[in-house]
Image (cartoon, rainbow, N blue to C red):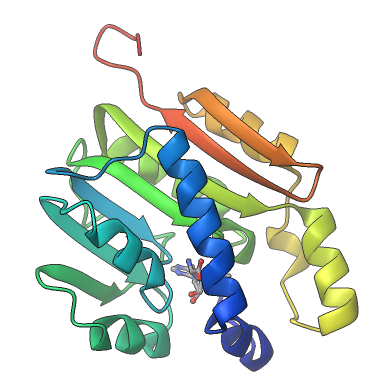
Length: 199
Ligand SMILES: C[S@@+](CC[C@H](N)C(=O)[O-])C[C@H]1O[C@@H](n2cnc3c(N)ncnc32)[C@H](O)[C@@H]1O
């Protein structure tokens, strides 16, 4: 779902960038390193996450987002060899199975009524021993933000952190690291096991 005008503006703010930097630092504490890796970012927004990731010099990076305005901003950052494309995260069939080492999400599943489908795709697209890094706000936080700020999220897409974690596990991921900020938002490292079913 495209962002409301209010949320779109908030997502471009220095406050959001500062928060995203902190989220990325948590990913790094959880072992995120994109050096020489094939990386897919789902819901890359205006590309601030891509700037953070580019410091690692990945082998390949693709960022997708459903909003043309976000992709235009991401492209304007002109990060060499990074690809940005307009695409719905519920329809990721064009990405080959077992083709990515890392998939990363900074807060987008709560916009997508079919978010469980995105998790299924992520598992399929990751190579064995690949890693899914996920930061997401909970239903409680989004309802509170919408009450005060009227950002207008679709209530059907919201979930609790417990539901998110359960869905990751049900799709085959092993949660190796997790940091929950009360029940408001969570940062997860979810690993796809190797071919022997182990980490
Ligand atoms: C809360 S913003 C986060 C953007 C960026 N990841 C960040 O951390 O600033 C959510 C992003 O998800 C994108 N989005 C929403 N629904 C989507 C979908 N079905 N497929 C792909 N992107 C989607 C929005 O366009 C928006 O850029």
